[in-house]
Image: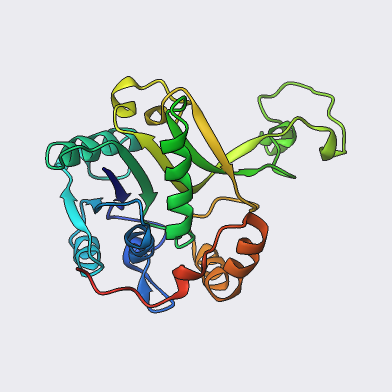
Length: 256
């Protein structure tokens, strides 16, 4: 059996009550829940949270709540420890649990079709541990990274480097895009995934989606991008990725 787990903590400082902030008339955490419930390969949807407002919105969308222990609350806890707790909690209660789809509660850019696609790859490819959605770096390529020291811009790491201005000449680089993590349940015990995502297992298959930066919300600017994406951007994304995102904009189904 496959389940989806959404992680959504309370206490956001950038946007108060961020995970339940209304985006086009729906609490933000309800978007990944709705997407997971629309996925054909998902048998149950759970939300790990330490916030009652998040829990209420999640229950209303048809999710089961995983209560977090006090020691896993706040913004200083390693996300992987929260994920492992959630997987173990579900595993104790769901017979035949095999694969987990882990979603973030502060993004709307998820669809049931994308979840099903990632799970199909994971179920077909017995040689991999997990599937991760990524975007291909452009101007944000690591070879162009900088830092500020003593008020001045220097190459990241402080070492001199010779890098072409033609980014097309760079070796391809990718970033997790805050979309889907799909992994076999035992990966959370092995801790051998690519850091900082140690719960993903050693062999991670990429699903490349067109984007320019991460898809989760940390500011009101991000909220504006997400509203635009719901109104128009998901159509362009569908054309670019070949994955239907239209279900995101449909009214949520009644919980069963």
